[in-house]
Amino acid sequence: MDDMNLLRRGVLSDALRRAATRYPDRVALSYHYADGRERTLTYAELGEQIERLAAGLYALGVRKGDRVAVVSHNAPEMVLTAYALMKLGAWFVPINFMLRSEDIAHLLHFAEPKLFFVEDGLHDLVAPALSQAPASLEQVVWISLGSDPPPSQGLRFEALLQSSTSIPEVAIEDEDVATMFFTSGTESAPKGVLTTHRNFFASHTTFALTVGLRPEDVWLISLPLIHMAGFDITLMAHVAGQTVVMTQLPVPRQMLVLLQQRGITLIALPPALYVALLKEASPELTLPRMRVLMSWSSTIPQAMVDGWNRLAPNAEFLTVQGSSETTATPVTESLFRTWAEVPNGDGRWVGRPVVYGAELKLVDEDGQEVPPGEPGEMLVRGPVVMKGYYRNPEATAKAFRDGWFHSGDVLFRDEAGNYFFADRKKDMIKTGGENVFTQEVETVIGTHPDVLQCGVFGLPDERWGEAVAVAIVVRPGKQLSEEEVRRFCRERLAAFKVPKYIFFTDELPTTSAGKLLKRALRERYAQSMQA
Image 1: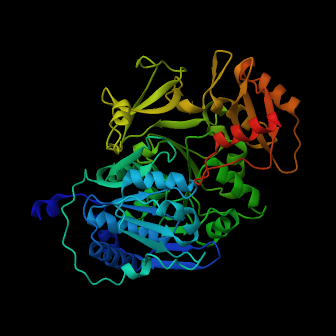
Image 2: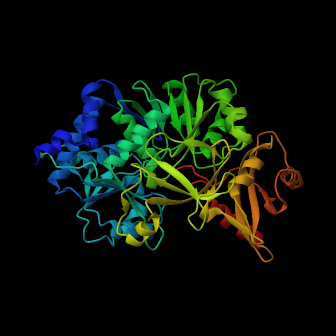
């Protein structure tokens, strides 16, 4: 290989090796199964198993540029597989375990992986897809998480760690693809986000400058690794030599025990999971070691901030704006402690532009920058922006225009330079010819003292085209009526933004990453209205 490649390159496998050299005895991964079992890997052990797995993959014929798909809940095997593929220059391609069998089959044919790693407990879900697998697929490898005995067909993951094959150094450039995450698994033309080694390093640098990462930090990762945010933070922590405490599933009770017992200092969750943890926490529990509570791209309810002020009195909230296409990196960031620090009491606040990694501007439908107070689509450029969409030149060309990445997210800023997340274009409600940003309505309702959580969405309406609707989770021990909600909204919102339909529920549907699933809300309540 080219000696200059080894001499000057900046790639993730080298960074992971250096972390293992510097912190050999430090715990790299403390993994907690759903059944209570624990598995621990030091950095020395992590490094050794990466080398062994890379050798096993190489013996199976995996080479630079090959795709290797994985479908699993969080598992050490996922982490090891991703890192071993980075050493070989192959692509880590995670697939969402919440998809239907036919969607998984579709993505396999789209990605054309050489190998497919599958959690044993997902066998029944994946079996129909395997029966119509693409010609590229040469081997299935089973990850055993104890749900079911591994199927007889295919290899067991442990077998790949026994290889004694020596592998050559692979010439990998920083602009080579490291991962392909899917933004959606059900579109006719799925969008596979191509993220490079350089993208990840730029992401990690941005985080470090924003949060002030420390080698002694301990992360709790309950976000699924099938999504960019959970994966990127795990990778960043390991590049930095930090400890990752990871759960198989985001179970609030287990997470609270780990937050208390393992000295967690940083956590990243969507608001829905922060609220779920508050509901499970005992009144006497405190987490004084917590220093950063990260969340993104969603309205922060006041109840969440007030509750965590009590639970983690020394922690700061970090709200950011980002996406898979920007390597789940903060494009904007805000650090604050109490609700009183939130500008205008607006829970959509995502801070100010970061100093590294990306710059942004907000534009209207004609591509002209919008003034303060006016919503506009967020355009981004910088080293965290993905390389493009896999096998989708039309989507890439549409997203990459005029030297900017067009995100599809709508933000606005105030005169002081604070940015606020208005909505995603697809979630905006058009009612009677007026645009309603769901996040604005959620922000207002979220400040009601009896509201724990809410989700705003549109429902079909014969008169208005769409009608504003909201599903509300009331704080424990409180009561709330539809008329009280409407009166509260009428005092704070224009009449056309006041919800016409108000529903009360015990919980809101979320994605595997804990994000509010508005499509499910629309389907649930559209059906209930027809019944």
